[in-house]
Length: 134
Image (cartoon, rainbow, N blue to C red; front, side):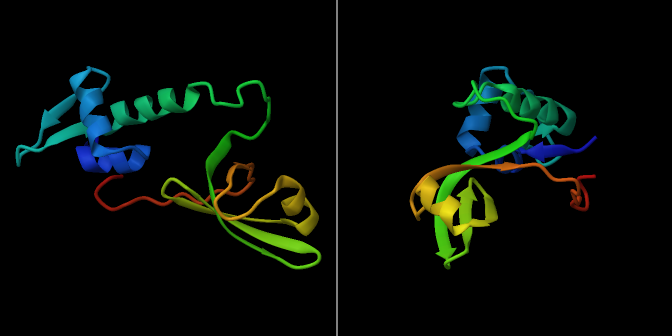
């Protein structure tokens, strides 16, 4: 089973190193020292914790949807012509790009600096692994 250093766990969960250390101190995550003396978190435990975080009610908890993937972030760029718009968002470490009608982008008030949530439902998902963490 892979183990992740505190900084790796933080990056994977989209939080700061200090947040992961607080979770360890509070007993929400268990850490143990690796051969070099660095604190690590078990991959399976980290996955369970990520699921618990994802299951927490979101700000729009009253909204029901079939899509399971939503990313809230800042709009960083909007390129629109008379028909279509390309909207780029930065959602934590993730860049999300959406193509929509220019009319929809205008109605939503999408402009750089505004907050939005990208809701994604895809039939094709490509999964990659990092050597040494599979």
